[in-house]
Image 1 (cartoon, rainbow, N blue to C red):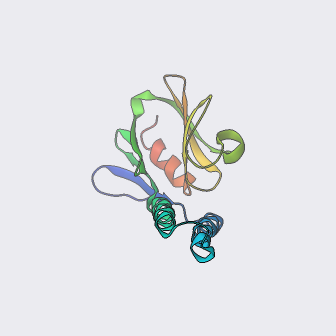
Image 2 (cartoon, helix red, strand yellow; image 1 turned 45 degrees about the horizontal axis):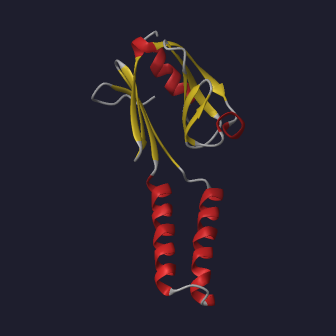
Image 3 (tube, one colour; image 1 turned 45 degrees about the vertical axis):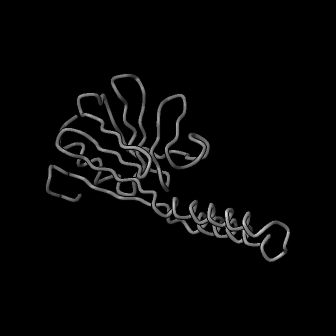
Length: 156
């Protein structure tokens, strides 16, 4: 558990760094280069496709899931897309759980299913939160025990 200033009790940053993702992205980028060498399409269109490919790679490289447990809430930032604050007063219960990202949510990232929302980057362990609204929120973590300890400090 990281004891940090500014009321942060727990802090974790996760990024998409799985080798299989980067291998797939590089294969796609290479496939975008092929039309240049084969002369199938114009140079301008090739440049546009390659630019889009590099932007897509930059997007995956810059995406981060930042989770903070502070003294009154959980802060989730899935950069560069969204930020969410979950006040402790809206949490009914929480637990560490193993989940199946592809079967339950269709993969990693910001995902939805009938029971709620998931914020995940890698792995299959998360903190499942039951909200007072009846919806659930799953936050993927590589440090489940530290996350749980931080939550228990506030005896939610």
